[in-house]
Image 1: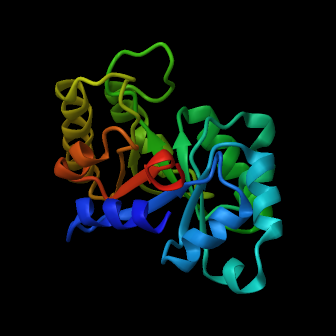
Image 2: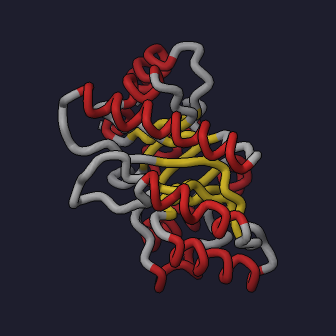
Length: 216
């Protein structure tokens, strides 16, 4: 794993990018090893698995680790996620944003989130379309239980880097437009996974979500 991390860090270079290690297939021992190698951000896409892993961390790790929820979130799982993750990447509809805001208000917190955008037609992906997001952004801003910190996208499953670049450059342009129109700061662009993260970094990603590149 140390060799994998060294390769990833070399490819990131000096880019201001946070490395989120995706623990979907990782054991607690592997998570501990990654932490010992300097990784402090971990992402999970299954609620129960994430909560189980969180409960198994040592107190030293628990105080220093930042957990990201990166999977599709069903509304009936919202209460289990809100307050247990430093950042939720996958807010893919206004209704889900409302539910998270309600749950956060009930818990007396403000939940940091990213808005998931579907930049290219893909029946296997969820998310706001760019036009939907522009139409609903003012409504999202009024939800007092969430704090929108940026945008997230998942490129279609392809090896075509032209498609990757279309998605990643498009998300950056959308972020810039929202900042300009609404006078907000959206500091995070969560884009890039194991196969396409280098392209994402070249297009301005601030967070890459890597599983196989680290743990395989």
